[in-house]
Image: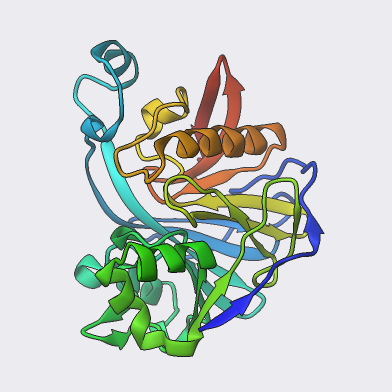
Length: 296
């Protein structure tokens, strides 16, 4: 297993970008594919990929009463999704998370976008829960045989040594020395690229090594996060509410507010693994919480 340390770029104030049209860049032109939302970040082509969508469950939220649910959740319920992101950047094909692996949907979708599994150069894992690494292997064989798999050092230690997740161990095993560990930087600190134009940022709480990724090209920026939140309808407005899946619920709440405040204050569009299609949009401060506006 390889390891890299990160230092270099200071993440200070950031300017607004158009994450759908790419500012002064032309929109991404691809065949219309169900469950795919394409856009540009500078010259990078980015694709939000839906693996699955189902009825949501508010029972995963901690300490939420009926008054909160009736205010934020429609009477007919809401939807929960599992997404991934494909980035075509400077000749590289990069995945952020891989879904659960169910039905081979993520692999089939990238093929429709003209990318074979052998052409994936890197997979960035936000954290080692099964709905984020599930497509890494099939029957012990690497799905993306030419890819390096990047996982934060804290995450690897926690889930492969201290609190072993056998699914994660099995998913990473076929990649051997192509599993690369790293230490993400803190918001506002000095951070360097993990790959050209991609910067890892610590977002601990949900898991001990949970990482979000800043995508930057041509002065345009975009934030991708995994399980910063699970029930968007509630947790944008009330970021102090955490989920039963969070390893450290209090830390997760603090991180959620910090990241959303950072994105809102610097006008950085965001995308989430558990935000329903289109899965990307903008966030702004509203009252004591935040408001998310989906891209169109």
